Image (cartoon, rainbow, N blue to C red; front, side, top):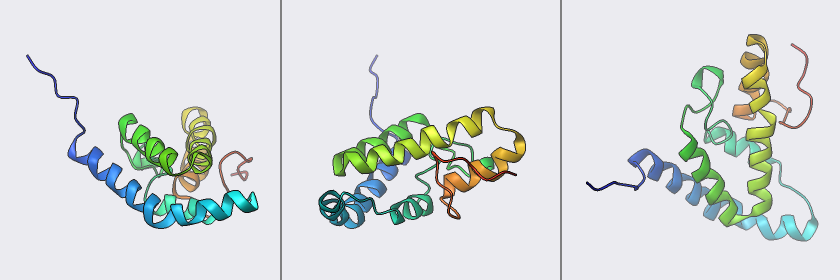
Length: 132
């Protein structure tokens, strides 16, 4: 009996999408961000457009509906590019969204969690969400 530990086609597509985005869009920002000790906040909107902020959350609350492996692939690829970017992504995707999705009211899930997963409006995870 043999076991296949390879990634599925969906996982490979996630990996390639994130690698390409890191290579083409994030890598050019890393040096400037480190030298200026700043963070290009516009990357959150791009991550939201690609569905990377809510990878493991259901589509019903604005997530991408993918699995934990996809979530780990995103973190791994971002970490390869920049640990600062990966940590910011992780804090937003996990510390910011998880409590709302797990313990929030249906209204909070439909509002704040959805905005976090898509990086809409000005609110970002890690800050108090606007009142419903």
